[in-house]
Length: 619
Ligand SMILES: Nc1ncnc2c1ncn2[C@@H]1O[C@H](COP(=O)(O)OP(=O)(O)O)[C@@H](O)[C@H]1O
Ligand SMILES: [Mg+2]
Image (cartoon, rainbow, N blue to C red; front, top):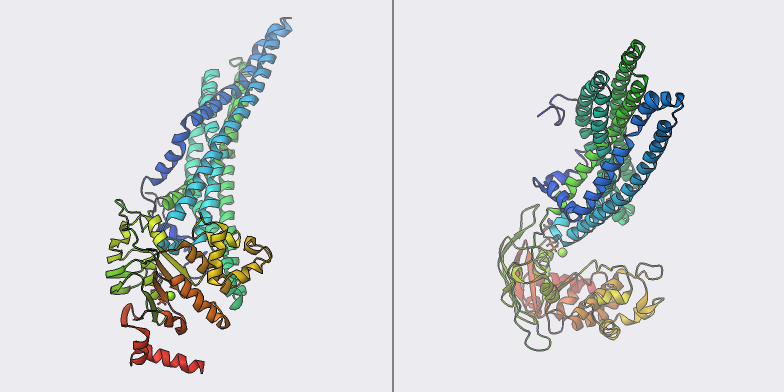
């Protein structure tokens, strides 16, 4: 292993990372080590279905090169044979050369066009495929993946990384094939024209090769640094804009400007480094090339004077030499795009190699049929232990049975583990030990669609998708009719405010006038849940944004959605607890009180204290 590929010990310290140990995109290394062979496998899987078209494209390029490189031969023939023949009043050879040269030019143009068209179709197809795969795969990955791998990173994968692959495919590969082919063709031609001159030209490729290797090693480092720097800029950008409200609220603008400025400057510096490497490489290769041309012209002229070399051969040799060295600069660019693309493809392969931590069951089980019209299902937490990847155990050992149709309210201080309980029941995560059962079936054995139909969670955020209000309610049950959608909204008590919107149910929630408040969003989310009609419903502080005057309406709405189902209501305010059959008080991932609301209120425990404090606050 050479020192240049790793950070050599004793190299100058990296004074370029802004702030606290931010090295840009550490997650790609720490969280997503790309399995060996994954990158090559990805490339194969992209090209294999398009084998025939890739072959045709390559063939077109080979033909085009063969035709292009024939040019100087015509010149040599013209100078040494056709022109002397013309002088001797034999016009045939010169006309033949002229026609031949022209025909080559036309054929080269035509083949070039055909190649570009064919390559563009293959490339677009590959990129379309890749973007689609990134999207589908990222969407299918589990919640815990998205908590670690930020959306900025995902955006970076499907934009800059796909883009650098596009550059390689569109320009780089053609460049590479052209360079290699012209080296082979031209070296052969030169050697065939004149062994001595050809020998000098071929010998000059040795220092050029060394130069390319040196450049490649140095460029890899600067291009890695550059792609990391770009990713860091995107991540910071997305993070800031996603959190624009807290940014405003806490006046983070100046600090963010400074952070972003530092990242931006680092990107600029890495860009400068890349250009500098390129400049060194180009200078070096020109130096070698010009020295070789000078040597060949000198020696060739001497031999022409001597009479041991035909002038036409020297002219052709010089023309070929230019063609030999011209592509070398471009070869440097190819190496750049190759290295960026390889780094990008590796990151994409790492992403695509991720498997969902909450997988579909390999041998799925079905739920038993529901008994009457609106029964819930029994929920059992059986010896469940759980902790997030980062941090300690949140639920140390959790046992709980909720009979079908029971409404249970869960209260407890922030961080007690209430939401964690809810997320395990919705199978956003799997327990590290024990089981969560729905009517006796382990959630891990349920097909995902069945689970999503059976268990619905409404959270505080009440996210709305782009589309109309009606669309957003119907997400609960896509085959619902407009009547059913409106009926659900009416039962929840959302019909009045929806009707008052500019286009009623057809109001686009992302357009002006369609903006609806946090409380109204929660009502839409309730309507969605009601329409979905799940056996188990979880409300995680789902009423927290509803204003107090609406409390009666909220109670009614809750009673409507909860009726007949098994329900877990994580209560933010104690008034909602009153509609529950049972109350659980949680502390540190454990249930510390469990009973009917009236019992707990009358008792001397935590809940009685909470309830008294709440009563007093109302008075
Ligand atoms: N996604 C997460 N990753 C790591 N730790 C988490 C995550 N979500 C919650 N926690 C931790 O788990 C504990 C319980 O959180 P949570 O279930 O959200 O509590 P509650 O809903 O009762 O306020 C807390 O200590 C919290 O910091
Ligand atoms: Mg919570």
